[in-house]
Length: 572
Image 1: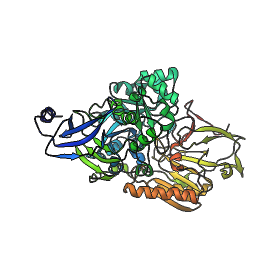
Image 2: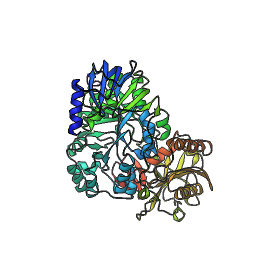
Image 3: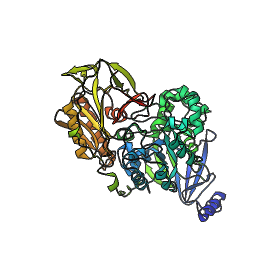
Image 4: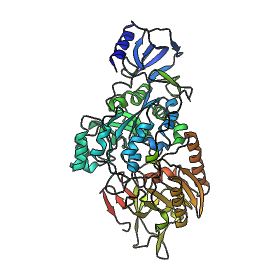
């Protein structure tokens, strides 16, 4: 804030100067005291000048609506929306979201620093604050091959950017706990800045060491006891409600008037179907209140708690001196945003945007990122034992299980078995960095025939394919390469449906409504032609290579026992 803005804001707050706009007849949500205050709110130069008995020549009568701070998503990967940031804003701003804390590690794993620069440029000038925590673990570990390696030297040039906060989810728990060199270097360099955490199932002395290492927050809790232990250790806990992982309702027993100050909401990864359908943070508010959380407590978590988790004292409340990022609701159960203001300017009304899309940022550095010839990849798997390790995928969870299963063998080869919901799974390194491929098996996708594949494969984003026969799997892989990335369903030699994602193999260049239509068509044909029983097998597929989420995953380097953080043989 410059001195001229500062002095004028003071004058408006004192009543010595006229506000730019006065929002009258408001029921102001006081997230500090957990109460409703009736009055007017004076706005000036993008800030809130005061709450109370203010007037001015420019006013808008809110008709007794509930005026709340703009909603905050405490942790999100914008790339997982599968659209450019401007399209993402079109989806979430009319819902009341005005700030997101973004971790661009998806695109950074593909394109390195160029990916981070693209995301910052593409989110500039939006009526949505896209604040960034820099990716801490690119690649996520030494157990997969990504498109880039980002050390402290590569991250430092971004530290001066005004929208860069700190360090994103620190997934290298062993590195933090045992003080490994590269981990220590990053953690110490960012000490004093926000450091987001990523500690699924971590507890006891290991959790203590992890907190000592520096992370402030965590979004990986799946049980109330886990969340409470992390809060007691001093972490902020984010209740996640994404497309693949939906943990919010399970964690609500941990929410009370004391813990709510240390808890917030996050989406992590959320597809267009949910963003345009059930919603964003507004959906999380509805879920919380429907499950017994007091509305003002839920609103605190969606605003002030999230702001405080990252030291953002300029937002998160309807109070003097804070940014005029506001949303008005007609009730505190449905949380349907009637209007949204960003920096004092109305940017959405009755679910419709009142802003134009941002110009498209340069994308040359984040296109043409698929560098693999699937025709040269042999997916055949010789049977080498009586039992093999099988990944068990669970819908709505990122955590996988492990089963030891007798393979179905034909001509000496282990093959998929639809009768037992046993699909062949393969991960192919696609960045041209000399990686190979690995083959295994997965249960839980619910395919009856054919194959599905995607260039979205957290976090290294290699090509991931699962299917009931090798021909369908090869067909799917070839379609991905030709499209420059995306999601695809195939049956034999036929490509049934394809959603192209040419930007880093992660994002579309189409409007979000079109992407939703294409994704709906893809899911529909997967159910109708491939017999899939899972609600969204593509989102499940995308997390099967994520070697930092327990318990067993498959990367391009092989089968990973995440609990021991080592590669293990497929055969028991």
